[in-house]
Length: 323
Ligand SMILES: [Zn+2]
Image (cartoon, rainbow, N blue to C red; front, side, top):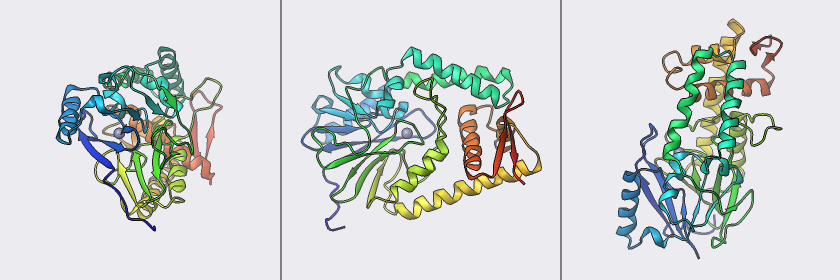
């Protein structure tokens, strides 16, 4: 890396969230256009905290000229609702149905998970839990993107930064990469202290098959190895400076978890729900979406590797280890 890492033009803010993940980080880029990357949750606590921190450096929320979203999750978009209507909001097109709370999309969302979880062997009584998915949405926003970006794009007013698509944790996920010094604003693509969950999502339209978020996430991690990245400003917690070793560690850990699932399937073939119950006996009821995403993620990974096969001839999908 020829040039010294320049972090002065990027200012970090940390605001509270009501979620188990804790605080979320936002970043202000003092480019040609004053740009906020990510927008916290929609709570008074978050908004007051953000205003205070901005005030301490002599700025007001109305000074912010555009917002870039790393992904659509409520803890990264909610405060959009507190900004003036006219504020430009930029992100991957896949953010839109989530951040605008598109009713047609959420109908499809419910239908998708009802179908997927039924095929996964979930007791119909548990399907009520799907309604819980909607509760974090009250901390989300009711906005639409004003412009969209995809792989390789540059954003108005930020000529030094490039968009890298990083799906897995969310289908809408992007990071911003500054070539000259290898600085990345990374959202939840990778975190220093925890492994972000690849989450199941309905496909963007009915014609498409569902994505395999764990497989996608591993591809994202491997893709990031190809860039000369010196530091990652993360969405939660501390910066990452040793990205390569962390990526290798995360990929290793995930493979270990997948192979423990393979051992379970060698004992007996199971549905995804039975696998989930065995993997997360104490939390699967409380965290059905998270634990099923994790379980189906490991199963997708093993299927891609050719270690297991899925019997789709029964009422439920049954996963078998190949002998
Ligand atoms: Zn997050």
